[in-house]
Every structure is written in C-alpha cells, then in structure tokens.
Image (cartoon, rainbow, N blue to C red):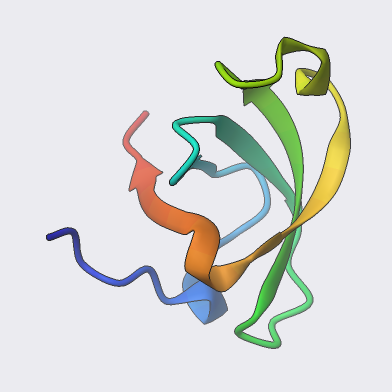
Length: 67
C-alpha cells in the first residue's frame, strides 16, 4: 500500500497520480488538506479530460510522481 499523500505539502507544479490511473499537474493548493486544483496530463478512462482543470479530492490521490 502506498504512503498517504499529505496534501498540505503538495506544491503547484507537482504531478500526482490518481486512483483512476490519471495523472495531473497541481495548479493550485488551497492548503485545506482536502482539495487540489489540477490540470489533467493523462486520463485513460476519459481522454477528453486531458488539458482540463478540475478539483481533486484527497482520497483520490495515490502518489506524487517523481520527475
């Protein structure tokens, strides 16, 4: 099992992987520990999401992607 990602420490510009196997770049972090604003980089389940911005809930984040 992966370590829990502490959303308080996630910085804009970092890439995250979601349970849907999508990856997204963090655009903004309100530092509430619950939400991140992201731009999708890949989305196997919904290719139309790529390039779109959305809010992501903490429980949907699997890991930070090393660059």
